[in-house]
Every structure is written in C-alpha cells, then in structure tokens.
Image (cartoon, rainbow, N blue to C red):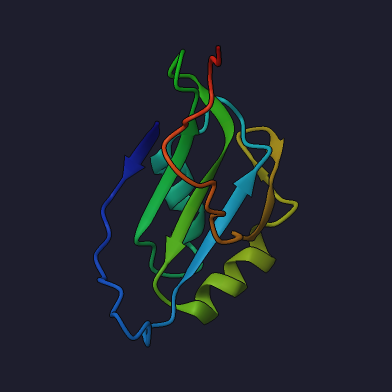
Length: 113
C-alpha cells in the first residue's frame, strides 16, 4: 500500500518523449511524511509525486519511498544533492529507481495436493 502526496500532473506520452526521473529514497525515518519528502525534493525542482511505502498488514511505513520528478536534469541534480543528507534524523540513501520487474501472474503458488 502506498501513501500518496500529490498526483501525477504530467501524462507520459506513448512515445515516452517526455523526460522524467523516478527516484528511490531509502533509510527514511518512520516519522517522515509524504509532504516532508516532497518538500525536500521541491527545493531542487518540480515534483509530480512523493510516496511512502507501507506494510500491507500493519499500514506502518517501511522506511523507503519514491519521488517522481518531471524534469530529468532536475531529478538527477536532486539525487546528487540529497543522497547521504539528513532528513528527520536519518541519513538518506537516494538513487534512480530501477524499473519494476515482472514477477508473472497473480500469485498462483500455494497449496498442492
């Protein structure tokens, strides 16, 4: 489950001509809010979305999240500027997010007889 702050303001064209960067932010404090995360990155450019990943069972933050920035150059500069800096008492690990891996279908595992 994700906590969302803001919404995507820029649609990604089918040709993917618009440059944007999706950023992974790790080692976050459990007290960090989506708004606080957004604010840290807005100091370096426009932010489309800031999300915190939460545990499905408990709803508690898992200590990492993602930021989407519509301008590739601003996003890369934000990564350099924010990586290894302090936010809410924790030293952040920031880098460009890797594309999601496809894990196949809808969880067909489970019990076998």
